[in-house]
Amino acid sequence: MSSHAQNRARVIPLRPVPATPGPAPAAREPLWRDVVGDVLRRERLAQGRTLKDVAEDARISMPYLSEVERGLKEASSEVLAAAARSLGLGLTDVLSLAQQELARQSRTAPAGAPMGAVLLAA
Image (cartoon, rainbow, N blue to C red; front, side, top):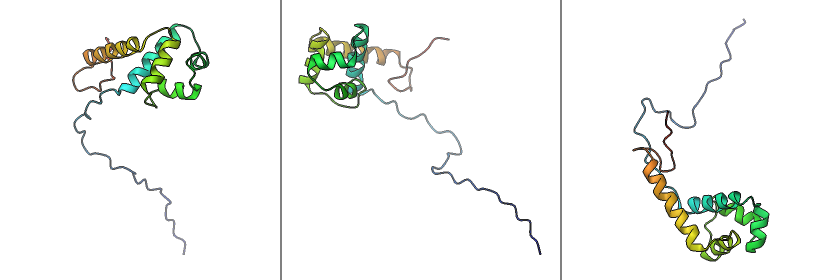
């Protein structure tokens, strides 16, 4: 007797898939550390300086500065001031630029979109 049972893989989803689309997820406001890190990176790149150069000048480790720029670490005011000085800025300059970026993001985000989203014109 030979049975020809077919071998069919059965897919079991790890997360349930909603049958109908639900409401959009709540808008996520940007984290302060993300915005400050973006400001530091943007200023460093505008000056054509390397991460190593700024980190050495600020007397902080290059991996730590990299994590601060990427928003992975919440830097102390002392570290932010040292990084700012290395870039020829004051701490108030960095904080002011970060505040301006937050204000810009809140103005350009469409209703219901995450705060970090930018509306692109078609």
